[in-house]
Each structure stands twice: as structure tokens, then as C-alpha cells.
Image (cartoon, rainbow, N blue to C red; front, top):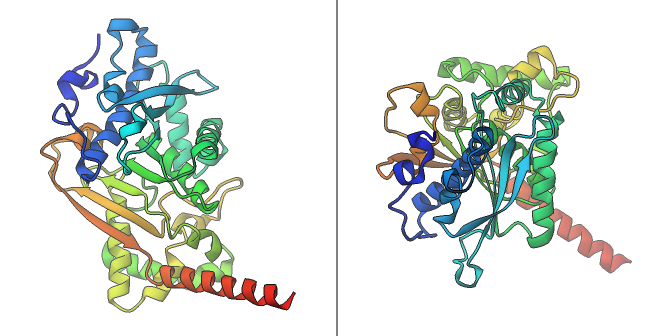
Length: 352
């Protein structure tokens, strides 16, 4: 039997009878609902709910989307993602996506629980990029991009699904294919509760010691993400994702005290990787981002379950604070690099 949170008529954004694609609250609600559709696809599979018993389709059909492909894990055959297509393109608003690729988070049911938890551990160890589920997700996105480009695509995910979407988005952005991305409660794998003075000391330490130890990623790799602004939706009462708040507040503080140059170097470095070294086969932690649109739910949650849940992100009474972050100096450096490249190309074309 379906729970109340699975039933669109009981828990969905019924007020969205007509989506205003210029309204960010509406866009966020639709993206979260499409992720909920993936959760329900897997719950339908696990409970063998078919036809009229299925609870998945209203979560996309209510917004004029259709399901064109289920993404199934090759290890346990669970449904972890879905590709949706807007089914009325003739009247599509220019801010409405043609395709949305969405990924669910961890389910604590026997049909997928052990596989999901194993992936949660890989996120913590910065080894998600080694897993077949990530590669299936990346290939699915690359296939869609190859057909229609990036301008009309959204990525969306919740919790573990947000980690997958973030890693896919990073890979695509580094290849110069930035995709509009909606990340609900994305995992922050670091130390979220550090006091400001400790964060500042840590930044100076990383910027000073890490280059000597050779444990830092190159500027090019990090700054390649500067033009990509994923939407991060976090709740202060959710310890899984709340670290993003301190991460970006600290960067702002470093700029205010005149240490922006130090922070440009330090923000590329994970404290764990600096101390222990990057594990073989690992990559930088997901939370290392030069740019992001951060939305914070300012309504206090009664417990962790609600703070981490996806329902909050389409709640009609939602109240949040939005901030746009870009590493200071990054935009200027990228612009200078582009201008220099153009000048060199012009020079050599004239010379040759």
C-alpha cells in the first residue's frame, strides 16, 4: 500500500495547476516533483504496483512531462533515474526544459537498500566516479546532450541522487557543456560545524602547506567550473547538506578580510586529502565548487527526516533565502584567459 507522501493528490504541489516558468519557486517545485517520480518508480517496482496501483506517473504528467526512459542499476536492477520529455513543445516556454534527467536518493527498503548504502559510502570516500551507476547516469546525459544540446536540459537529484547529478554536472561543465542543475539536500563531505576562526586558520594552512606537499588540484580543473552555477537547496537542520552554508559563508568572510587570494587557492583543496592524501582512484570531494546558487530553507524543521526530505522543496509555504556565489577573481581570470586566447588566434592567423 502506498504511503501518503507517495500519492500526488495527498502530498504533491496541487497548487501548480499552471506552471509559470519565469517563477523560480515553480521551477524548483517541478524539478523536485520529477525526482519524487523516480522514487515512486522504484517503489512501484519493489511492491509490484502496476496500472491503477502505480503512484509514479502523476508526479510528471501533472506538469506535461512524459517518461521516455528508466535508468536501471546494472547491479541490482533498481530504478535510480529517469529521463523525462516535455510533451507539448509547440507551446513550450523558453525557460521550460525539453528534457529533465532526474535521480533519486537512498531508499531504505530491501529491494535497493544495500546497493544504495554502498553508494553512500562511495560518496563519503570520493569514489562515486568509479561506480557503474554514475557511468550509466553520465552516459544517459551525454546521449541527450548529443541530440539537443545543453540549453534545453535540466539535471535534478535528491541526496544520493543529488551527488550523482552533481558529479555528472561537474564532468559535463569541465567539457564545456554546462547544464542547468537542481540539487536537493546534496551531501557535503567535510567538517560542517567548524568555528569561523578555525576555518580561517585552515584556509591559511591549506594555501601554505598544500602546494609544498603537492596535494592540490590544478587551477585549470577547478576554474573550468566557474561559469556553471548549480542550484543547491539545503536545510540548516540537515547535517547531510548543511555544510554548504558554512562553506560559502567562509568564502565571503575571507573576501571581507582581504584574504580572497588565499581563499582562491584554499577552496580548491580538501582538508582530508591534504592530511591523508588522495586515496588511489579517488577524486576531489563533491563540495569543492567555485560557483553556485544556494537556497537555504529558513523554516525550522522538527526532525532530521523532514529536514532531509524532498517534500519541503515544493511546499507552498516554503520560505527560503537565496544567495549567488562565485569565487572572487575567477570571472576576471576566465575573461582574461578567453581574451588572450582570441588575441593569440588572431595573431597566428595573420602571421600564417
